[in-house]
Length: 455
Image (cartoon, rainbow, N blue to C red):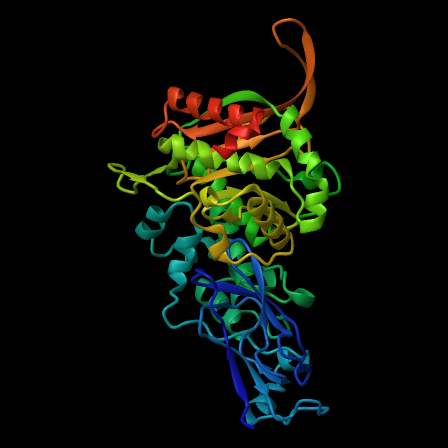
């Protein structure tokens, strides 16, 4: 049987992803649906399963490569499943002479012909206009930092052909770059990070950058004690960039209120037997998401986005609600779709399934898109309140903190009530204080008397 070429499957909306792990060794057998490699998008990782049983002839990509849907990633021998080895092709025999092949790895794919090293420099700097004005910016920077190392013998450095080519074009000495790949292998991101650090160092003498924001001084913390430098995950980098962008572009206002959820908790606990029978755990989050959906329908100003041209408003007639999930790799926000058509049981099941997928790193890009509003709940973790950052282009986000028994005056006496602190942040370009007050008041009312959710 002929060998089979495995390609990147549908990524659920992501245009490109990075190869972060090769799961097999050359000649190793794989079962149907067994993991071939692991890909990482902006906010999720995903395993690529084998479509057939067979033996891995070779990988057609390497760790650190960027791929898209339809790109070939591996070659399988479908006729040799169960045999001890795969017959080597002429190409494999040639590759054995390289350090990468001797370590059981395939060399990285060559640099795309369309990839301009100067564009790499410009994409990494926070001052693109300056990079355009100075076409020799990369040379000027690396003459200072790399200097005599550029022409030195780097044959003993563990890096693939594409990385070496990129480094040569940018004038980067690989001996100065710290590898973060397996066994210290230098990948493209390492070269890119080195370039970015060099550009930041070159511009640090200026008082401010193009945005007018003063630059943060560089501090050598090692002078004060032991430190460890830890590289951010891709999810953490994207989250940081998104938070910074949203904070700079959205005029935030936050309003606070408490909801009496005493009756809600009693009702939720009364559903314990039904919950066990259905195999679905109902948390307060399900009720909060349902209340948000009802409030969005009655206050459509919160279900809007400001158009990119700044002169129009996009009114949405669907109700998709994102929920922030804290994971080991960083914060992700899966989206529950069509919440307005769902009951509490359906929402509770969706919350559980998406939260588990988020923590396991199995969310697809499509499951984190299309949100109208976001819920960020810190109830389990604790805290009396916080000011969540709007997830632009959404107009609002509701933050929920830990509930607490408090004395509440009922007109005759103080009685103990379970109070839930909430904070509503919103884009003041789209929403005024009156709009926010009405929205928050309705959410409080719905959570204080869950019977209203059935109306």
